[in-house]
Amino acid sequence: MTDRDFPPDFLWGAATAAHQVEGDNTNSDWWAFEHDPRTAARESSGDAIDHLHRYRDDFALLAELGHTAHRLSLEWARIEPAEGEFSRAAIAHYREVLTALREQGLVAFVTLHHFTLPAWFAARGGWLAPDAVVLFERYVRHVMTELGELVDFACTINEPQMVALHGYLEGYHPPGVTNPILWRRVGRVLLAAHHRAVVAVRETSTARPGLVVQLPYLVPARDDEVTRAYRDEIRAEIVDLYLDGLAPGTGGDWLGVQYYRKNWVDPASPTIFAAAPAGEQTTQMGWAVYPEGLTRMLQRAAQTGLPLYVTENGIATEDDAERIGYLRGHLHAVADARAAGVDVRGYLHWSAFDNFEWSEGYGPKFGLIAVDRDDDFRRTPKPSAYAFARVAASGRIRALDEEDA
Image (cartoon, rainbow, N blue to C red; front, side, top):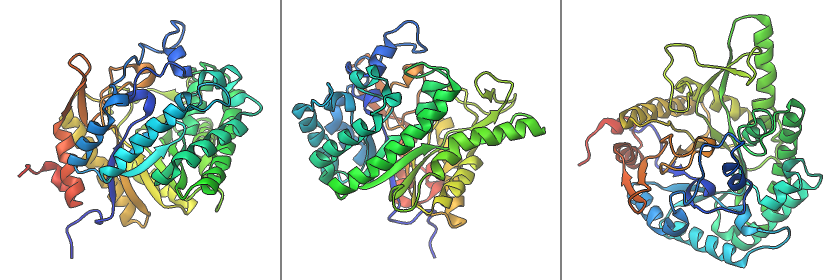
């Protein structure tokens, strides 16, 4: 008998993305978007949290906090700053980064595309360029040939449905387009790019390729036939397209599930979604907290037949006690899915650090570790970081509420 909620080989860690933590990513489409006053971006990423120079200390801190895995991304705009021109210096830098990660004993989940594009790729049409998939595959082959032996899990594309939704329907991310036809087209291009990237990863390395998808729990804003049908239509584009598109053998070796919220789908809303009803717990992002949705979306993802990892899950809040409560509810949701037979093998919290939250800037606080950008980027683990460490060490959810020895 054991009082563990998770087995000893379950992976524990947190996630970051290059643009959100590295700083000075000046050759990307996001840098241009942030500096354009016509866009939704509230501020520039600037130096971010200077992870570009502080990665060794950051990885050591995460290891001290009991993490056994870490998810990060490589910045395509640094690696291929001009079309077909690959930077030896950038590859050497990321070799040092991944080596430092391995030296800390952290399993490497490496995302090859996390929202940002090189400026030259964006200028030629981004994901709508006729050769977009070919160019992405070329980048993946180069990176994995150079660095693949240091990659355990290769995450091909981060949240392709959100790249499409935010960038081409809501206009909230680059390229700032609001077009329902292009939204659907880009989603299918990204799925094709993932399939080509899986082949490239397998042919150039021993890393295990997989897709990471955000799976919100979607419900109709009203209980009528039109609204329910519209919810089903949106779910088909945001969830089913990607999960049903992961054909055995070509879809990858595993699937990353990213879950944050319950969404009310409303055909009367210009943004697809209605605001959360009064009385719902919401985050700094306005997202409704609903742990049971994670169990349900893990069960849906399990229909792919792939091993699952929670590769992002977290809350934007200044109240760290609320973060611990969020962890409690969502870790129980993961445990419930496992108890129901879902093969979930790890949990990576979003995020390791307070960082740049895309168009929302530095306001939302997702991190287990606070960063004072006005005091030499000083890192300070929050109580939630130590609570999470206790869970990682014991495999017991109730360790969140225990005192450190």
